[in-house]
Image (cartoon, rainbow, N blue to C red; front, side, top):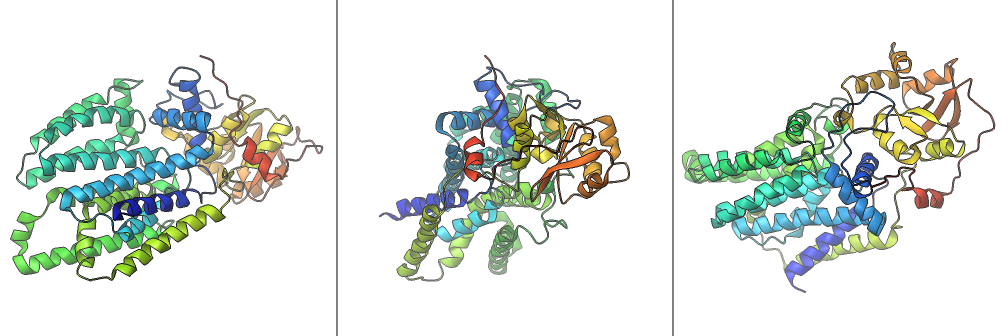
Length: 504
């Protein structure tokens, strides 16, 4: 078997094995499926919310295209296709990275170890199939491939591909701003390289103007710029890499990051030592370091964005990593042993694991939702925003929610802080109840408000599992509730069952 075929086969099986280890689907998948359902079955992009009992504004769905793709895969090929779709997309990211490496240095792009390290570094952020931002990581990689092809082979005609891709990217995921920023990075880098840079500025202008081609028109661009600069201090994955919560997490990525930084510093120091700093600066590829530093900043600022740095590192640092290891004459059998080990791990994982739909009991209020459905408990539900879209998907139209993970797409700024004050049982926790009174509360048992509600004269705990509890007003509580089944097969078979219907 040729080295290239073996490499790509091993890489795909490794990625597929990682993808099948997920225990639950992404929290926002359900809202994306609803949006996709609106387009495919209803024939229109949804611009107003109908899932919430609280005030909402225009639904600026910067991921509506992702929803269409997810829903079509689910409808045509079933739930398993969503897991396979993630594996294919992650594989394409690494495939384009390997092509970029080939263009840049003509180095052998098939050293599986570096790809394995990169995969380990990012999989903690891709551990639940499937997330919309995966499209941005893929498009980001494709943009680098096109831009490297342009500047290293002088094929300027390829720049005309970028504006149409920008339109597609913009209607699939709001991370299109990273692609627009990449054009500016290349313009600045080539300017510092004292090479032709105006073509990148022109491509940037045309691509930015093309953002207007979306279901909302010009107003959407204002929202897009706002959304990409929003801090989201209440969402953990938007916290910094070295924040208190993430300080001892994301360990594989931190090892990969520091290893890459040390590799670059070692080579830069070596070059400066032999040729001097002026010559190094003159010969250095400014584009490379601008992209690496920019994506490093994104990774350190927000853990959700760390794959951008991993992709950039794979594209631009692999050549330096390869130069370091090429100094050592490893026997051919060691290379084969590494491939054999990774193939064994991948195949063993795929064969030994029950390749089935990850229900997420304990992560989602699966049994709590079933309890509400079986007992025909109708009304407004207060649930944490991360779980809101799942509850909507399963219980609409009998139940509306306080809010869900669509966050700034639909809801006003004050709603998340109000929910936080409630969950943490701050002195003014009743403000949420008074302003937006619910009929049912589903709450995680580890939040302080759970104990407060248990002691309350107004609410009664009517059902609880290991992670969640269901509260009803005491006046409506009934001791004769039907208890949900413990049959995991039932929940797997009904996971994607919904009462939401659209008519064309």
